[in-house]
Amino acid sequence: MTVADVTEAHGSGSLGEFLRARRAALDPEAAGVRSWGKRRRVPGLRREEVAQLAGVSAAYYVRLEQGAARNASNEVLLALARALALNDVETEHLMDLAQPRPGRVAPRSRPERPDPRSLAMLDALSDHPAVLLGRRNDVLAWTPLGHALLASHVPFDSTENPGTYPSLPRLLFLDPQVRGLYPDWRAEARTYIAYLRLISGKYPGDKRLAELVGELCMRDADFAALWAGGHVGECTSGTKHMKHPLVGELRVDYQIWIQADSPDHRLEVYTPADEPSADALALLASVSAPNAHDRTTTPPRRAARL
Picture 1: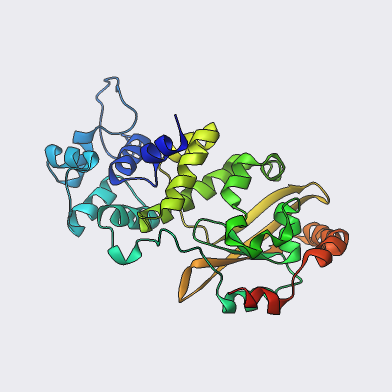
Picture 2: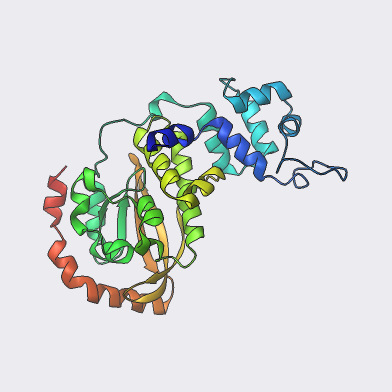
């Protein structure tokens, strides 16, 4: 099986795939469905049970899962969201899949470029760990300390060309050094996949995103299994526990900043979660400073490439 085959099979997700994954993950008792002591042949809810909870016909729900029903109303979709106990982000994803908006279809060939204002914000944070991320979690730019924290073995100037943007999902699943950076790697992986699935619903025409998902499904069994789970999530803040090869264990809080007119590009800023982590970041800054200085381009050159 080729990457193209896997891309077509898994792609960027579909309404039917999402519905099947979420009903399989829902506990029948939690949903108010009684089994009366009978053994269930399938995990989660049956199709007819979801239909009953949502107040639609079983035949119509089956057509939704098969992709044969189009233009489901908001009322039906919200009823399905309640039946499947979806949270706000998952409900948003359901609406994106069922009612794709033409204006949100991603350009297929135009490479992502960082906005000069985003680069200016990043330059203002030059002494802190920070990265500017694109729609697919490609690194569009990073500060020297952000580079040292996340992937010091990747060339710093790889962000200078769209063809060499570091892909954080590829690094997390396929690069042993980055994979080893997170003691609770599976939790980090779930977060990445949940975000990729959310974006896949907003941009169903993003060929590069579909190819990324297909590639990772084929090359990494963990990614394929987690992607099949259908989890969706928006990651705007939190804490990362890391075990850095140079400075050891540390915990960093992160916060995502989104520019209103470039919502696909996110500035992720890291701050130490405690005093030992602050000491670890200070040590990392001191040991990585010479190499970072050699590879850092000046702000005018980074802005000029736009």
